Amino acid sequence: MDQGDTRQPRDADAPAQADSPAWMSATELLGSYARGELSPVEATDAVLERIERDNPALNAFCLVEPDEARAAARESEGRWSRGEPAGRLDGVPTSIKDIMLTRGWPTLRGSLNVDPDQPWTEDSPVVARLREEGALFVGKTTTPEIAWKGVTDSPLYGVTRNPWDLSKTPGGSSGGAAAAVAAGMGPLSTGTDGGGSVRIPASFTGVFAIKPTWGLVPHYPASAFGSLAHSGPITRTVADAALMLDVITRPDPRDWGRLDTPAYSFTESLDTPMRGLRIAYSPALGHLSVDPEVARIVAEAVQAFEESGAVVEEADPPIPESREHFQILWYAGAAKATEALTEAQRDRLDPGLREIVDEGLTYSAQDYLTAMATRMSMGEAMGRFHEDYDLLLTPAMPITAFEAGLEVPPDSGDRRWTGWAGFSYPFNMTQQPAASVPCGFTEAGLPVGLQVVGPRHGDALVMAACHAFESARPWAGRLA
Image (tube, rainbow, N blue to C red):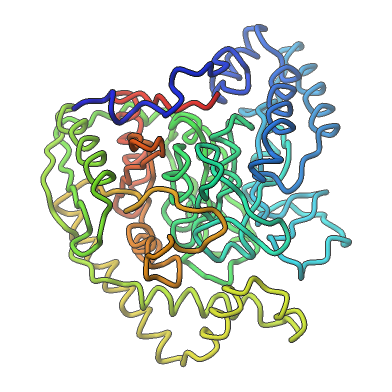
């Protein structure tokens, strides 16, 4: 494998400010705080400086509170100086996707129809757990309206761009979060994923993200997209995501579908060996069209698992093409999410969202139940598949980032984002854990992601596999 061709960013020779705290991982920052080598104030200042410098071009943040962040950093600095950190993330700069309720800050969801002038008194479960562990919130990141599509632009906040190429999209719907992490605007960010919304932008921007097993990370308020909707971390390293999962998988009584908190630590499980694991590699899930350069980079990445002692064989999971059935579930969810709007408010929706809302209103109960039956059969098929294979590897995306401001690549022939996201949404339907880990760059300098899928409740193994890959193929992607 010629790693020089696929793992070096376009500007690899540019100064990367490697000594800046903005590029340190959360685990590195916490170690530096503990040793007294760095303070949360210095780390926060570095992150805020990058936000001030680069956010006008990227539009990754829709809200930044520098004074509030610096005040919190000074409080954290005091705790560390006394040897009394508030929790496992004390003083780590963190951003929140503008879908998640955040006490004291508006959650506008990229929509012109949400009134910002109202009490914001509650944290979502993920935000509450992060706050309890001392995470330092610097702001909220952009999302398409109600997180409905796989790119990030909205009527309220405009177009978000990819830090590797400002003419390209970062993907979505957690595109602001991924762009922020990729650009050194904090090591931790939160995302949601109903059809690929952490994995799509992770692949397009060269960061790590995982969609855990449904219910593992508590979710509130309940999503109109039902059990398609997951929450998960977006980070630059697998270890940072493991640290976040150790925090955000703790229970919350507001989520009636939550799973029990894992009895294990994700962080302590990262070094699980790959030797002897049975791994399936599906280049196209049996029916998808994949860009040849993406296919080559992913195929080369898969070799790392063979080199680690795993048994890898090419095999397609026995699941059908499910776009039509996913769209029924997704569009019906969009219709539910907007059911209380007046006609005047509907006219203010993202035009694409308005179209799928109108289509969602045409479905019958029988249409919905048929889509659910397909979903259940897919879950059963994947359960049987994982009796033979511990993990499944695929491209995270069949393409790289395309023009910002568009829902689909130009001249693709598709009308909706589901036409190019066929590697992601099937695993929302089956509720399995699935992650995107950076695995290379195209000749044009755009990142490519490898998707690692595990059986339901196999989250720790997925994380360990991603960590093993990251260790074997260290990621060279850092922006100047």
